[in-house]
Length: 214
Image (tube, rainbow, N blue to C red; front, side, top):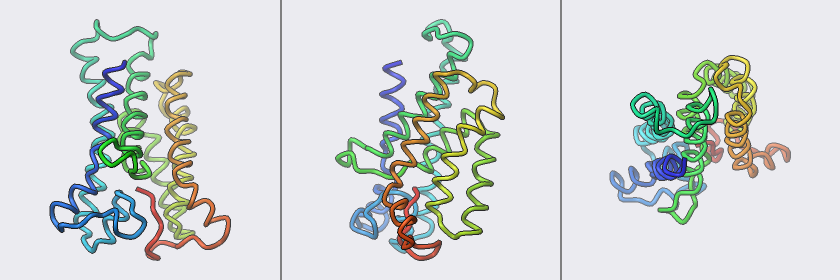
């Protein structure tokens, strides 16, 4: 378990947004906009392609963190700790959680990272793909109606545990759900400034240039 947690954290902590902007534009993305390393802030450097690459890579690191647990289980099941019939999903949910933590608090950047949305999508996709689809629909609807990307991200994160329990029977385990709920809560808490602005009525809408959800 310890090895899975460490590997997942280190994988999640790879700051793709920072690295891509530094490599291709010679800039520090943390000096742009909000200072976030996610895709939204990368887009503010003027390169949509780097933003798209950041989004995809950030999602992939969450997905790979979970995928490596299933791969290990397929080839070395006898070496896994035993927690009952949901053992593999417990470890996969744990891997996803630590990948998200790594993205939010990367050791390489003094623990100042992104908000974990893209990484969580990748991690959750490996654990409960049907639930991710529900969350993406909710995200698109909320953003389409309100034009608040942050609100769509917050609601998507809040919906995921319920959707996972409902649509993916493998997640119906107390420990699996504990990691899933903890991941969702972390994402919501990382949007605390956005929540404050939403409540104050001064959050920027989609295209306004300051909303951060990556």
